[in-house]
Structure formats: C-alpha cells, structure tokens
Image 1 (cartoon, rainbow, N blue to C red):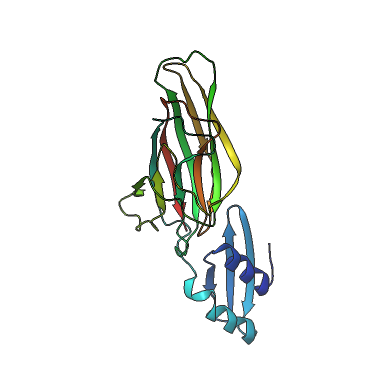
Image 2: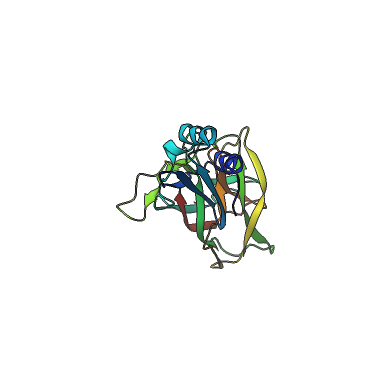
Length: 232
C-alpha cells in the first residue's frame, strides 16, 4: 500500500519497526513490514522537508535485518502445592528498553498428571495470557537459548517460573489466549502445539506472555515444553 511519509513514519515509530529503504540518488524508496502488512513510500530528494525528517528519524536505524534469529526457552513446572486459581507459574517479558519486538512463533507443551487418581473427578487447566506494566518476580530465572550459533545475542527477556506462583504486583494481565486441560487421572497427558507462519503473539518492549492456573492446582499436575520466538 502506497502511503505518505507521515503515515509510514508513524507506522514504524508506534510499532518499533526498522524501516527498509533504498537510496536511488534522486529519491528514497521506503518499505515497512509488520507481519503480512506492508506500507510503501517514495520521498523525492526535491522534498527537502520530508527528506530531512527521514534522515533524522528513521534512516539511522533503518535496514535492520527483518529477523535477528530464533531463540527458545523451556517450560518445566510441576505443582507441589494446591496453589489457587490465577497463580502465575511461568512468565517471559520483553525488557522495557530492549528496542526490539519479540514474535512468538511456536509453542509446544505437554500437560500431565502423575500423583495417583484423586477420588473426585476434575479437569486441570492452565491459561496462556499476555501481560504488561510490570515484571513478575521470584522463582527460578532462565536464559534464552540461540537456535543458531550465528544468531546475534538475544535481547535477554526476563524468564522465570515458580509452581506456587510468581509475585505479580502491578502486573496488568490481558484475556486468555488459550487454555490447556488434562484430567486428574494418574498417567494422563495432553499435548498442545501452536505454530504460525507469521506469529502467535507479538511482544513489544514491556509486554510479556505467561502461564496461569485456570483453576486451583492439584499436586502432581505439570507442564513441560518449549516456546520459540524471533526478535526484530
């Protein structure tokens, strides 16, 4: 879609996107991508105001790699207590000053129960939820892993887990993205896989994704797997 310089500038700045450009001598040819959405703009050098604005604002950070590599981390939670509903057992947040957006592209999880079948029937459940405003604290921290040794270093998202619930003071949670359920029956398992050619969730600086108990935990339920993302 061909748009004006003002529109493509706002598009890039509000989404923290690096613009792609060619310098043709008598003009700048610009493109901006956000997922499958693309904007284009041409700035003639004769338009000195727009040329100067582009060179002062978006050009210095322009032509950054569309992808800066793929990264992964693990999920490994086993409930050791009857933690109440809405307890946050795993979280990952894009640092406020990272300067890049995280695109979650694959989630592979397996929920299980291994503590004998309780007398009462129940369906154990976790929510995957987006959040912002603050970073959960406590628990065990994790470090992002490169999926290619030639990748640039990750922006270093804050990743942590605690089966009895992370501290979530001042965290603002969004609506649940999905729910994963498994019956409270000894040896029961449920697999959850979500892949997307573009992305499942987009985490701007300061935003995160977490796993919360949808109902009170039963000792012996657990969740293991991986979450994969790119950064740009």
